[in-house]
Length: 362
Image 1 (tube, rainbow, N blue to C red):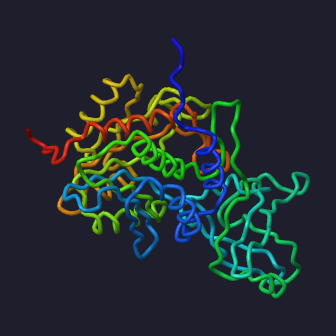
Image 2 (cartoon, rainbow, N blue to C red):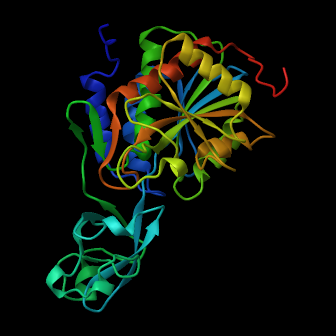
Image 3 (cartoon, rainbow, N blue to C red):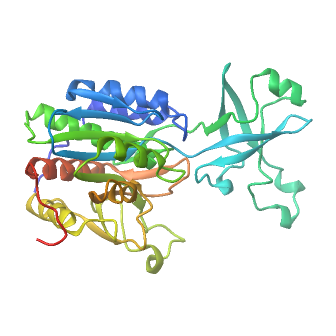
């Protein structure tokens, strides 16, 4: 059987590369939001930008019944925390940055004067003792080629400057997207492509659709909490990433059995509204979209939780993209899964009726 033609085209991949390569650290997402809003502009009727930078494209803004499709825009990063007299820079996490991958990485320090280049320095193997060989959050440091604190500060670097990795987007073996911040700007790409597909297929929705790219997820779902109160939706379908568990050193008995290339992952858990989840599963089955299942514990750890428990309760569900090497600079996902998540969300919206009843007891 021939594979279905991909909806993702060259133009959308150009947007994806630009969007992923642009730094959008938690609390400093504005430049990435501008890129995202510019791309979705032809496919929406209105926009909302809240106080902290969450961006929303709205279709049918006057409709009473409101549906959200959501991703988060921010990426993990570091803050400059302390500059030594010798010009070395120590850091604090901004989100869940992994200190073990830092040594020998190239970074950008974001200052009012522009980007300052630096590297995570690390002693040569010849000079280290065994007890010093493990990177820790308090022994990794930046070197920007300066010899004094004054020289560092002259470049515009000060406590509070944000630091991002320099690594950029690539396509691996023609079938995988690789880069930093696929968690979760790939979700932002997915919901933008859903908006494009609705427009190009001339779909008239009977409800208001709020295509939401939220900020500050990596530090506690903060952007979703704020925008949920602003929009006050009836339904929220959130897309984020989850772990591919097929690589070495991951225990399936702990993390589940999930694989890149086998389709979207649908989560079961208290924050996921059961009838909405059943609706999504029925759409996947009807449209022959392969999917996988994941059981969450007390929370999903995604913006789903923020929407679900807002506004006296919002029917919410989570559609995840399997991802390898999360919170590294080489996050990897399958192109086929990205396409499948787009198609699943699109088909759910097309089949969602105005004032659809997702009450717990039918």
